[in-house]
Image (cartoon, rainbow, N blue to C red; front, top):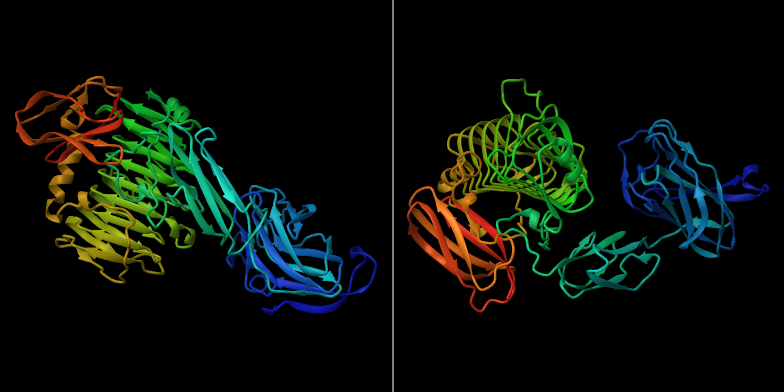
Length: 630
């Protein structure tokens, strides 16, 4: 089939109405008359004609559209060549003409296989004189079938240039927390139309960001329609803030650096669990919650983690054994201070299904190398368009295939992946530290020891490798096992005797600040091992013994900050407001004896609100939340 629309004279069959002479037009993808698809033009399934086929994304209202000129008003008959091999059911659609519903239901029955292409039944459409824009919208949550081409029969019709048109949906996370406004309000927006969004928080709340297909921290924001847009206004209660120790890609939602507050289940209830069933109940709930673990839970199960959850270990015994955590299509998730081990044959943690803004911190992930390399899967895998993820201060050890980003060489959709690994310790691992296809990764201040291979950049991925320290590692950086190499940006690393592949090169523009936690490369082994040993292996020290009188609830005229030191050492204790500004220094790098300490503090000239106290000793840091009421 040629790239231009095919026009001919045919005798219309009886099923199309009375016999008459008419034009037949076939419009292929990328031909004149093809406007756009809410998805992509693909070639991966055989049997199509022309340049490919239109494959919509999953979802109701996902569409394909075309533009046809008619010399006069009249009836035109329309068919599609399509394939529907998904599941077992039909994928019906609705046909709109010039923005108005014309055919409520167009049937696309199941064809058995994706390679089995058939012609749909024809439908009659009453064209107007001039330009007619046809839009086929999915009624199924699976989207439409694969559309190879559209065929039209009618008098005086021809394919014509078109301006793509798109839909807009504006939402807000909580209806009582603010109000939203946008203009202009239209059913469809031609490409290039400028839309202005406005968000106004209610009393006691603040506007955090626009999120979704359009992102901005500005309450009033104007953008141009270039595709279908679903955008959500995020409002939060006053004084809501995220942990001061969170850095990296989890803190943003685009490459421009639009911020996102990762608070996990902070706005929900706190529960303590001791069984797999409790984990499944609370982590799978639609409500936000903080789920605490203080014991060793053993199981052979998958636990799904939904949006707005914090899963945290609250004792040195907090350990999930044989239990996979699946973060699937979720956002705003925190997993901290947990051991997760010996999960077979699944991953210890899998982040999938377009999950976003996930923070894995101060965890201990491991199995053993006594079995074959395929006995366990990954310790932490990220795939299927999941993005904006930070992995920090975590141990990965005693494992073969450790951390895989994007699952296959065909997973082009995973180009959206953005992930930060910092201050992690990888040891006694064979490979994938991480292995990344397509996406972007910032890997800094990690310590690698006694591993065969470490970072593998594949299929056009771009990886910034910065101030990492490698000891007794065979290959520190490579581009292997895929038909296309990835690329790296190597900055001030210590590779030791490891082999390194330093090209192709790329430049990753990191959209967040991190210099204040960027440590000298020579100090990385001591800093990482000291911090992780304290948090996960030893008896509680500063980071676990630090507490406040009345914690975590309000203090007023004054409070006492209590902590214990295992040995004599230097201590800094500071108070920060919700904007991250230091408002008081209680202890300024002072050497104190080992043992318990109680430091009174009076908040002079500070208004009521949420504050954070941060204690630091060499190799240790801990932040606690405080609420000041006057």
